[in-house]
Amino acid sequence: MVADALISMLSVLSDPYLMGLILITTVGGVVIGALPGLGATTGAALLLPFTLTMDPVPAIAVLTTIYVSATFAGAITAILINTPGTSAAAATCLDGFPLAQRGEAGRALGIAVVASTIGGIFSVIVLSIAAPLLARVAYEFRPPEYFALTVFGLSMLASISEGGAVKNLMGGLFGVWLATIGADASTGVERFMFGNYELYEGLNFIPVLVGLFAISELLVQSTTLKLAMEHIAMKAVQLPSMADYRKIWRTVLRSCGIGTFIGILPAEGATVASMIGYAEAKRWSRTPEEFGKGAVEGIAGAETANNAATGGAMVPTLVLGIPGSGTTAVILVGLMVHGLRPGPHLFTEQLDKVYAIFGTMFVANALFFILGLFAAKLFARVTLVPRNILWPVVFAFSVLGSYALAQSMLDVYVALIFGVIGYLFRRFGFAVAPVAIGLILGEMVETNLQNSLKMFDGAWWEIGMQPLAALFLVLAVLGIMQPYIVGWFRRRKAARS
Image (spheres, helix red, strand yellow):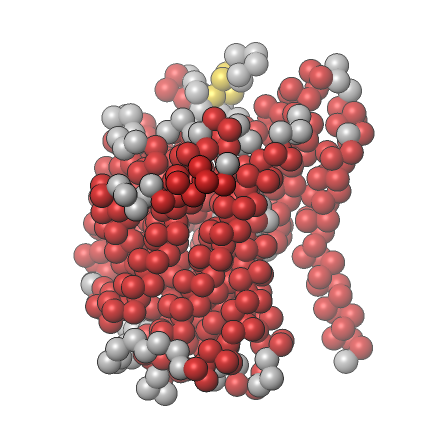
């Protein structure tokens, strides 16, 4: 079993086509991550339609490579221009830019590269071990357990960092409602189709994701065309010194665990991981007063955690079909359209493909380490691309990708409509990721609820009588209440002090 898994992972290295594809996509992912406003989720959503003609493993390799490389690359602009290329690099700005202003941009980027690589590789190792073990447990799940688990996944939207608990849950419920559009699979009843039979099988995920992530970001960026950015000059990336390693090694190890654990939690992702990694680095530091002024521990804590979350987020995505982040929601759609049904059966029926995907993530982490060390200065220059040139190109790719799915103008209209919806969500303080996650989980909620009711002859309360389902439902309630419980404890602590 172990030998077969290693052979499947190493098979990536012996496939010139796949290695070339990973290299090209890693370069593209670093460029996408370095461009403020794009990021891993937008890049994956843009490329998803163009992977439909590929075989399953190369297609998912493209999406996962974009995921890991763009997550790292957000640190480049966070350090050099104080503008995170991705939301996961927001915490890196706090110490990366002050260090760059002191003339140590190369040192800051070197620490970011090393910390990101360690976090990414650690999470892939955990993914390779934990996913098959969790898949064995998931074999015992029946419709009641899957229904409760999906409800738990939706409840975790309450603690996403953007927006607020109520807004995130509203976005998730809106996504669940979108999943009901089309004919009911059990009864054939038409719902919210308004006479348009192209919607008989529901909304296509891909145009919705392209609209929510890419076109809405285009509309947001159109309001910032005149903003000037301060660029920091950099000679070359410097590997951390022995003194730096002695200072950050505990932080790196801690953030590896934090990032992987946060990534495994449904709907959390790299942004939450980086914030917690940074906060814990400051909490355990011997010199917390240096944070915000160029502390290398702050950079290491944030960058290790956000890259460790990438492998962690793939665990619930592959094993349970529940996205661990916004980007893995896009990857989940890619898995489904290529016939790789997420769940425990994936690890028995197509284990070789699963471990080949793990191998691509490992190779991608190694490649962005090399690119980060030797080409970060070159990649930083992509920030000089005028936005009035960049974003029309993004718009053209968005429309082309939406149309290419089924050569249907309806998909283009859907992408444009959800681009506007996504912009309005962002404009009024809502995050768009909960909508995408709700859309994907909505079908699971409905299907497993229907099957559970059939099992219990309509006695819905029997769902809560199943031990594992009851545990997930309790965790769901705690997940919804978590922001309020944490806020209450913080207010009590503030009152005491």
